[in-house]
Image 1 (cartoon, one colour):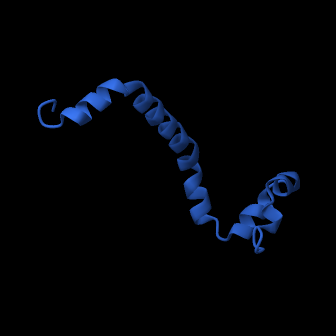
Image 2 (spheres, one colour):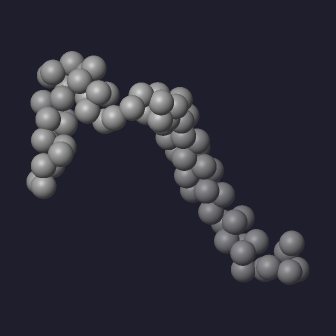
Length: 71
């Protein structure tokens, strides 16, 4: 690879820590979001999901105004 793409190989060698950090961060984000995905797809409407949340959380996140123009 070093002979075919010398600039790319040098860049990966020089910045492997940053690349590893981004890969770990992306993996962590996927590990948080992917388990929740099926629950949103099979539940029905967004209003039903919001109705199951605690009222304090809905107010704090502004989900009570999600259907408005400013929401």
